[in-house]
Image 1 (cartoon, rainbow, N blue to C red):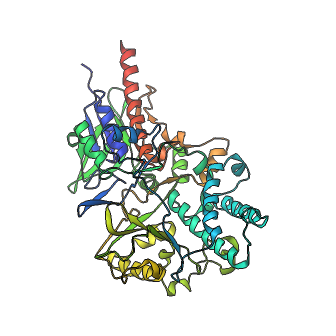
Image 2 (image 1 turned 45 degrees about the vertical axis):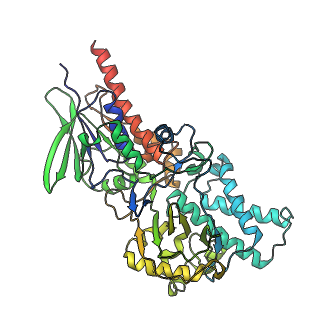
Image 3 (image 1 turned 180 degrees about the horizontal axis):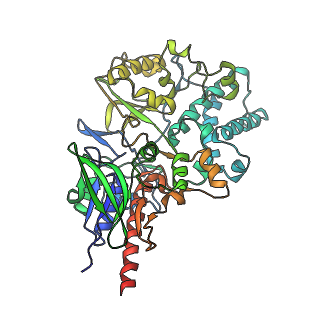
Amino acid sequence: MTRKPRIAIIGAGIAGIYAARTLHHNGFDDIIIFEASNRIGGRIWSMKHGDDYVELGAQWIHGQDDNILYEYASSRDLISDPEHDYGIEGNGYYCNENGETIECPLAKKLINYLDETKNRMNNDAIENDRNVFDYFVHQFNQFVRSSLNGDHDVILDERTIEILKQTFRWFIIYEVIDNSCENLQTLSTLSYTEWEDCKGVADLIHFQRNYSSIFEELEKDFPIEKYLWLQTQVKKIELINNDSGTQQVKLHYVFRDENKEMLFDHIIITSSIGFLKENLKTDFFSFHFPEEKRQIIQAIGFGTINKVFLEFDIPFWNDQVKGFQIVWTNVHDDHSFPDIRNNDHVNFCEMEKNFPEWVYCIQGFDLVRNQPKMLMAWIGSYGAKQMEQYSNEEIGKILTKVLQQIVPKQCRTISIDYPTNIFCSRWYSDPFIRGSYSNRTIMYEKINNNDDGYNIDILVKPIYDENGNKKPLILFAGEATDRKHYSTTHGAMRSGEREAFRLISFYNHHHHDER
């Protein structure tokens, strides 16, 4: 009787769990899922609070059509009605640090215009070798020119232009957070042109209860606990020649402070690109790791975004409030319109008299679904990492002052006091993730366009047995490995299924050849 293959999966996020589920349903049961942390879910993390949850990680399902996550969750009645309960970004009052609402009619039109141009981003932008920031600067100038020509029936005086440039920075921060990058100067337009929407009734779809309910349903679907090893960190991967003339993979791992090792026929690595980047410098890959894969891992972008949840004893905002978006007037940094940025030489000294640097990377404060006393701040760029160095108490004090400064008086029903609860994600500090999700950088675009044509398909290609038997030893999954749906949960889910079927296909052909 042929021995069943032993398969290791590194990481118990949605990619790893769905890979295990797919293998299990196709007759493979010698599987171990190695998870270094004390929970499953990876970048899905629903934290119970009161009668509901807060989502420290993934927030929404992105679209419906051809979306494996939506199809799975919808078939099990996990989804809220997307026609009536859906996510909205950048909602509410646009305010500056003087507690004034931005009343300029053109400001909202500018945001809508720039948002629409994302859908028109095409090969022209790529051929002109523009990064995303330069693309939006060009579109801003187009908007101003069309306004001067009377398209918007508004006179553009110096003050209006100034407000538009400040609004431009808010939009750039919004896009930085949306793309999980440091800044848009390093982001390739491939991040928009390669990425594909899943169409449908809504773009941002809620789970009825919480995002982690997907794992509760998967646990009913196959015995996760049977295969799962929590708090078990893989430290090193080796390739070993065995007596039968084939290769196996030896994993060195730590469980309860004890060093152990085990042989496998195959491993599926679902670790984040952030983790892989960091471990290219270690002996995690203790064999000759292909140079082209190394280059792709180094070139793919992987930034950090974080959320800060502030819960108040009594909400200070009135019933008309849907959120507060911050349009800073005194900020001159890499996200500012070029002439503003260049005039100030990216000097934060004056700003730091009011708040730490990271505060200026906050997009705004949103209301939190099913948490009526809570606001959530989105934070990205350099600020997301810097914020992680502060305690929750320090963050709460700072953001209370920010709210006291930016929230217009007409939006308040009571004074703004210190929150009763503060919850923060810290994705960069997690040594097994080191960020939030992937993007496509200018560096990635350049190696994609060179003679070798290095791209994500190079990373996805398995590392095969060197003995020429076409046996895939090491396979790669995770959101960053999905060409069309990277940065999403459904992209991660697709990737786990993809690599599971790669192994299933190998054994189907292998057994057919034996017959």
